[in-house]
Image (cartoon, rainbow, N blue to C red; front, side, top):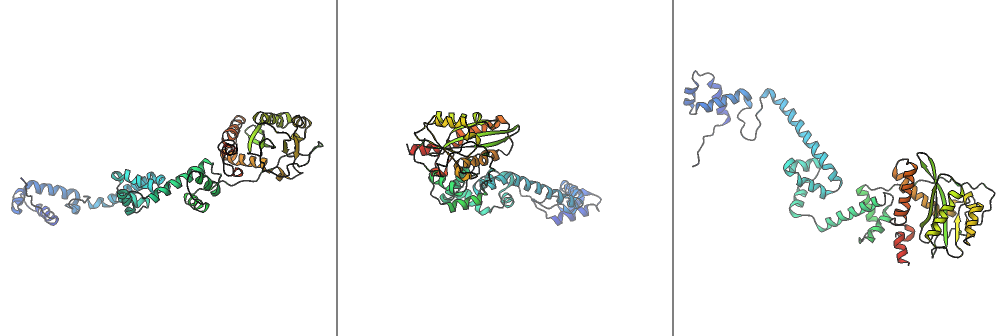
Length: 386
């Protein structure tokens, strides 16, 4: 059975309490105004505690006027702390795009409230509710997938490749897109490639040894493996001084077929070990042209005899002209940009040796895309041309 309770407005309660203090009998006065004495007693207690802020009704917080300022400050403090917590928790999802941000709001609706989260994160509540109840369009799904792939490729390339290379890789993965759209999405995502730096030339060509003419003559594109090899040496800065990296590259597929790291620049520690690895890894053809700069390690009698024993044609860059060996020097530019500066620290000799081995054998020779090979890896290029 439903019990009907009589409701009294705020003014009635305040007047009843004030007058009650002037009466001798609380019980008799309660009977006079038609209420129970216990109810009047409860009103008096509330009035004593909250004063004129009493009897506000449901939805209002009762605070004594003398404490109202403190209460408001504490309320604002809690609200600020809550907004900061929402921003701290939600900001990482905002950076990932609308969909992750919407999902964050949905997962925390009961904890923070939709309206508050949308306001703090700067997301329109109508847009969120549309997504929540109607889902996401196919066009939006495609855009999210595309931007995810662009970011993935950019990071796979160690932040070193721009719109053209990323566009080529996207097309290889089944997307149909041009470099202008890729550039737009990269700017939107804040993806900026690391720019190249100029290389310092360190070749010592001041010697009296024989230097053969430039047979290669900058013809860097060849049609067969084992016909034209190029080589160069560079220094590597470590925590315990310098190491020296010698490489030999086959111009056909740009693969590093021979390399060696040494702590000194003698021929027996640089060019000869690299050559021995190269001939183990790849067959030499009759009349192989071996091109290098004019450094003493390449001009030495020991190395010249080694090449002659394989019936190689020696070729060297013109004096002071590093463009004659641009492909080999270009590899070092790539190495230092993608590995050395990518590490952002000076490595120990052991770390450097391990990192160089990993870079050449597992990254450069296998996984890295080369613009000179029509945006293919070395393995893909050789498979297509085998």
